[in-house]
Image (cartoon, rainbow, N blue to C red; front, side, top):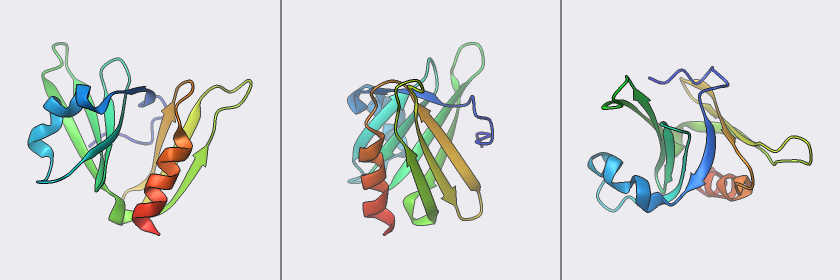
Length: 124
């Protein structure tokens, strides 16, 4: 499992979900749809219509990967912080039953409010 308590785990930039699709196709349920994808240099996060999949690429070759599935049904609360003038990063914090807080940081002009609406539509 990824150590979500480390604030340096995810500083993500938006990418086209189709770029990630082949790497997680085997994990997706029938009919599960990729909605948003973001990545660091090696790691990435995908928001589907059912869950969040966080992927930690490990080792020198990057062939070993840790896939963490975070279902929206276990989210108890969430917080969205948009980017500002001096602080250019946006943040999404989610509190999961049995896991605790998970924090994602997004670089630049990432539309974190869309993620807030997505999560709200799944848990409220």
